Amino acid sequence: MRLYAKITILNFDHRKHTSDVVNWNLYNLDAASPFRAAMQLILGLDPQFLQIVGLSLSVTLTAVLIAAVIGLPLGALLALARFPGRSAIIVLINALMGLPPVVAGLVIFLLLSRSGPLGALGWLFTPKAMIVAQSILVLPIVIALTRQIIEDLWAEYCEHLTSLGQTGVRAIPTLLWDARFSLATVLLAGFGRASAEVGAVLIVGGNIAGYTRVMTTSIALETSTGDLALALGLGITLLALTLAINAIAFGASRIGARLAGAS
Amino acid sequence: MMLPDDASTILPLTAHAAGYRVGEKWLLQQANFTIQAGRLTTILGPNGAGKSLFLRLCHGLISPSTGSITWSASGGAINGRKRHAMVFQKPVMLRRSARANLIHALRAAGEPQIQARADETLERFGLNHLAAQPARLLSGGEQQRLALARAWSLRPQVLFLDEPTSQLDPGATRQIEEMIEVLKREGVTLVMSTHDIAQARRLADRVLFLHKGAIIEDSTTSEFFKKPATTTARAFVAGDLLW
Image (cartoon, rainbow over all chains, first blue to last red; front, side):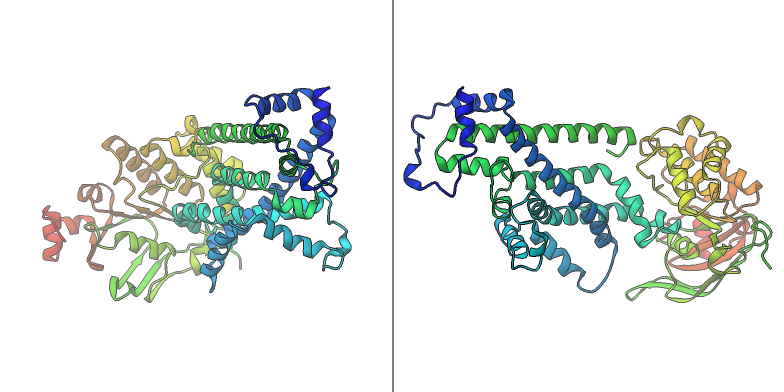
């Protein structure tokens, strides 16, 4: 019953709340309660909680997938191509790794808002908008780190591949495949960026209960309503999920690298 | 008229006053030579003489700053397939199994019957037991044998070898030299750089002696070692240090 009392707060409508109703029970927060809240959330398998976790994962993983499909070949191309302005583009993309999520969210918001150029899509305040926003955040990371990794690998492979006639764009599949274990780390960095951010998904998703509410926006909401135990519980759950995904990816990539002799 | 692959040849390879410079420094100058079909030509000289550069220019990895280096068939290719290959001093091993390294090269070069050719190559050089192993975990000698086998699998008419044994111990060197002898008997034209006088004596039919970016002698191996024409070559053969 205690859990349900907590969970109903996840449906709290932040548009109606005013700061004077917030009950900051920071001083009577007992140290074990966040962990208790986390355990209750995880073990209780509450459908609303699972829906929030599921949406968080599906939005972030889809965004990383999209950024990978676009960013890996683009990063490799940038590593191999030589053209005027290349250095400027590399600096720009490196800088975009630090793009503030709220700024990205704001730009996507303006593009997707009803009077914006992409307003006709009707994506604002839907999970699609959140995926677009997170893809934009992850893409510079994927491009910039892929560029660096492929450039280093090309320095090693250059003469052999040139000898075989694999130059320019034709070398990209070989290089991406042989760098696959380093690139897995790049995608994990991208996943970390997307799963941790709150600004972009909040602006373009609207934190609508049961529809666009994800873990980070829930945490922000629970903090502002004063239920710090639940907020921390959600935070612990998010950290545990991130840890699990990283552990699985690291293990798989390490085993793979050893089998391929790439480590 | 289209000739079948083995009936037409990309040789001779001819250099006319070929030179290569980086900035103001000439690393190779006024090189004139011809490589005819068959036999092994060694590019002999001390470190820094320009031997590796010479091979890279011949193989087309870099272009001469002046003069020309040309095959009798354009680009050294017949029916669109390059018929010369190169093995590097430090073998480039892809992060894949030994067999996948062969497959990759055959596919990249656009060769037919990839799988069968890879198996035939492993069989030919006794590398079957290494087929599934990650190429980068092989020993230095095994890597160089695989690199040589990989180059052979492309059926080149001309094979460039850049100091193929300089990083190997005597046992592995012997195995590589045996492979080179096999290729020679098969009629592959070999061009090998080395700074090892004894190796040149063992393997070469012809010596191009390179010093400070210039070919200062071009003669048969026996002639070169019996009476070198220049004092520099005499000193090198006698074992003096050149710089």
